[in-house]
Image (cartoon, rainbow, N blue to C red; front, side, top):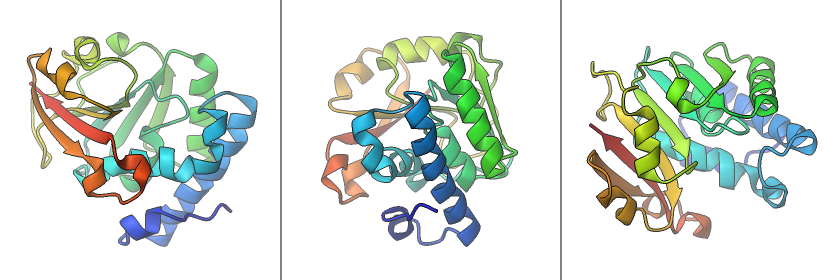
Length: 209
């Protein structure tokens, strides 16, 4: 099974079962990527750092309460949804993508890992059945457009430490995009929590009505 080099140091409280599932996912994602282009081929050697740990960075700011519902838009190879689902077995995740072969691969990986809290479906975000407590994604489009897709999908009843809304992983200058939309926004620079140079420009944007 694939060795995890970075995750245990940042998440020392994770159980052996969780670490084993994350390692299994890393291995499955690499195998599936040989058949289907789920992530950039040049990034395969950095799967854990650039993709799995990046996805788990959301958990540095919020641990979802049991019963929370999460929509992952443009999941691709199951990111950030599958790593977060492994950490949160009592949280329900719907992972969506417009590419059917990616959705089938994601569901197969989730099933092989034994994730009963993950469902993968082929659809556009506008067609996702709501409401959800949180919508997560990794930079599938500009923020104003993304908000227009999911603005009516957010559950009003609150049950988590952060207000219900969007948790969006994005690099570069996000502030111009934030100014172009009406939702409230918080920006969490990831380089304050992760020492690797790759995180220098990466941010988590929390948007909520």
